[in-house]
Length: 313
Image 1 (cartoon, rainbow, N blue to C red):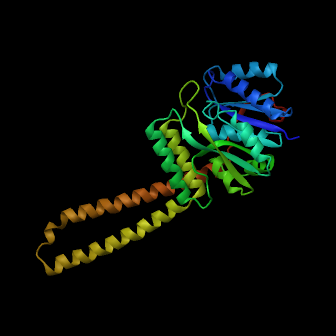
Image 2 (image 1 turned 90 degrees about the vertical axis):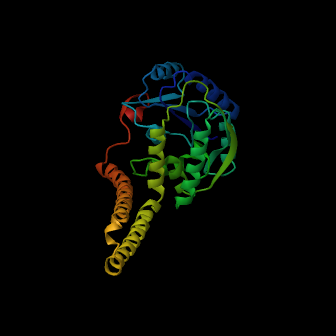
């Protein structure tokens, strides 16, 4: 008999928690599992999310919670749950009910066919704006082209995996988490199932464009050196342009009387070279910033309260 840990990051989801809990409980009943745990990770919520979670935990011993000291971000909250998951199989699902908990049964059945990871791939995404759909589509296409590790298209963190894969990811030391990429990187035997993503059950999305941009940069910097190579190529290209302009400047100065009128071309060249340099410095800065995060060695999350004994020790 297999056992199951369900990991749920929470950030201001008071309107969704009870409905999510009931649907997950029903799904686990359908799978006929008695050995399971539902781990809620409160990522610095400002509403009554943690109070609701604690009230559920008081009446159900299967519910575990980790209350973080502040908002550490979605990926670090998921990682906190992964670190303390005890069961043989682990599911990651968000609390907004866009990913239907009923799909867990399909994921679990597929995993039992002998796979180590089964991720949920979206066929449709209801309730999302056209620009969110467009940016998400091209982000995954862009990342697939850049990454040395094949990362499945149009998938989030909604997936099931064996605890062997879970522990492998937990042992990765990088500070800037991109879990869907890290799980893909582990290899093992991976497959997918397709599902229809629903509109948010209640509330509003907690992923601002600023957070989405940071998440994209974490994914690209963690799984591709292409931006660094691109900055090198741009440097060579700029050098070739500079050599061409130098030859042109000598020609104009020595063989024509038009050299005073070169001010415009000189300014354009300076601005072009300066722009390329700033882009390259920015790319290097993104990578160096992430190296600095890892060198500092600060923990990815800090726990304020929990009903998991290992967390308290």
